[in-house]
Image (cartoon, rainbow, N blue to C red):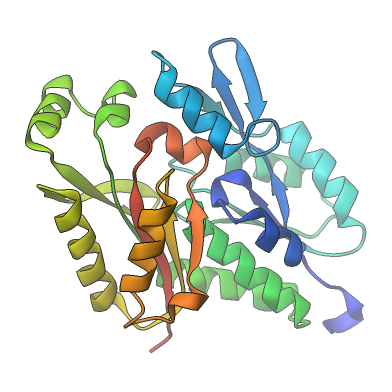
Length: 283
């Protein structure tokens, strides 16, 4: 146990896309972002399921918007769980969302609490791995200082690559021009994105989903060995399972976590995405 018997409490947000069973098993507190379809608002993963979200996304003419948890929501959570234990609060990149700023402002309102707010410089299960491994360390009795250092190490060692099935949602969100989106549709271009340094960056464009998967496998081989590995998908679970099996040569397939991308990231990538995020081993 840490000095004084204090066990750190782990907080993250719904963009981490940790499968609910895993979050519960590791006692991770997940604060939801909000998804807005026109005048209707839903707490991500609480008031709207993945099934409901993607069905509405595909049917909607307008792209939904998302908003971070309020400062008050964070303050309420911290007060409810903090007591005398330190809190490690692990969140989506500040360049992608205002969530971490809300967390920081809430922490500033609670000067008597030991709250460590960490920007993982990424999102989805890259963020999820930081929270999960922090929670494991907490259960092992590591101190808050040790867990904080571990999370920063995980951030440095984690990579995320994903192939998108369509450019439609990036175009609808104003992230790329309409001409480029049309070109992508006509040529069946599958863009591969790389989430690094808190930003979504273009990695490569290939002509088919099959070639995209081959490139992802090749890059996973280049990045191996991994301490942990997750396959990311949006609606295409069977394809994700096949992809996980294809990675068995570099990481045991039965240990790969399959995580469906939730509403916040899903708003911009749409259905049919496939990718991986792994924590590389210390060399």
